[in-house]
Amino acid sequence: TDLYDCSFLESDDSFSVCSDEVFFWTHLSSDSSYKLNRGVFNRLSSTEVMTCIACTGSVVVTGSISGRIWVWEGRVCSKLLEAFNSGPITRLHARRESNDDVPNLCASTHDGVIYLFNRK
Image (cartoon, rainbow, N blue to C red):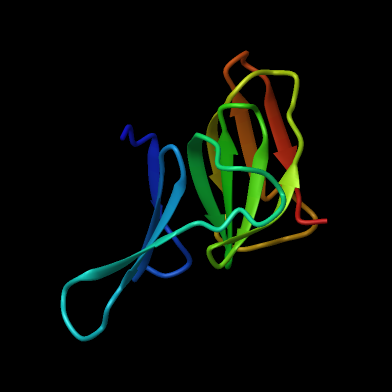
């Protein structure tokens, strides 16, 4: 399985990995091991190759090969932003703290287009 991106989440006790799915790893406080959980896509869509990941506050955001942006609450996909016409999402960067007055997420695509989003 190819791995495309990884990121620590809200706390440094958990991280996520993008590949042909999204995987969430949580540190077990009892020892030095981690617990693996797959991301749950629900009815929003089927499994898709995720190319990049970012975290803003408690919300995780992933970009996919189809150019869609996926919003995760916990390990469950809660929102899907449909495909942009600019190709695969190649990079995401998010502010750690949310502020509705300025962009909180920056997404770039394979075609060189950059999108800025706020939490509204």
